[in-house]
Length: 359
Image (tube, rainbow, N blue to C red; front, top):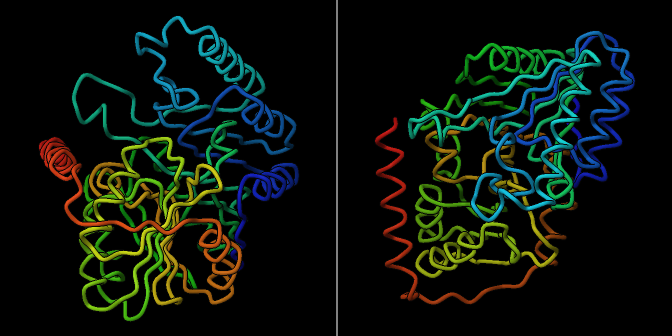
């Protein structure tokens, strides 16, 4: 079993490009977003040049209506020349890929029902020749590539075969909820309908923490904060690190509220937007993948979660992600009774009710 931590796009892309160039049989790319900018074009060029005979891109339908974090059909965006240009370039990119023999498929088409609006396939997964796989949080767009994030490169015949089967099932329109144990690694897939069972494994690790929990995520919400609150109250040192410059500003306010009432050490990352999501428990268990540890992931998104126990990977995460990110953050003193509490509590109840009605 070989698991390599790749921090940020600058480490991830050269490795992936080399694997795509060396592919002989297949290159399968699953992403939440793919845009027709310089990053999307780099991926397209690598795929088109690859000698592999079976090349596929599987993207969520989210990327068909949101570009550069902007909803294309919002009134103020419809006539925006820059957004219209990017939409044309994205369409041109897709056309060029198809013309070159790359198969393209989209998950979760939008529809009129609330479930078809909210349910998204959030996985980021690449499988090459059933020999190597990548998973983590990076999408293929300029703004996403500029964010702080990470991916893992995996070489293990059985584990890659497991991920290969998951990709193919999704390609065929079948979302799977499965769990498989390998040496130093456990992989869980959540199908968007039975997610609570899959995430119970994550919650069990939080509840079993003895000394420390470190969480880095841009969008962490309930029910994970409840478990972190209980851990803090029984004496576990809980640290939450979230970006100061969040592309969804509400989550920074939510973090302040939860930290104030949960006795959690809140730190704001000052190195720009961090899209990285990871949870390190007792320096022994690293939980990573596509999930943001938020309510939508917990209930309705399709996700891929890895529970890593390989000591060398955990050591690399501590040295290359956790410690530098803590050093590159500011500690926030939060006080209970924040004026935003009623509004955020109302929002939470509304979201819980809406998602519960769909599942």
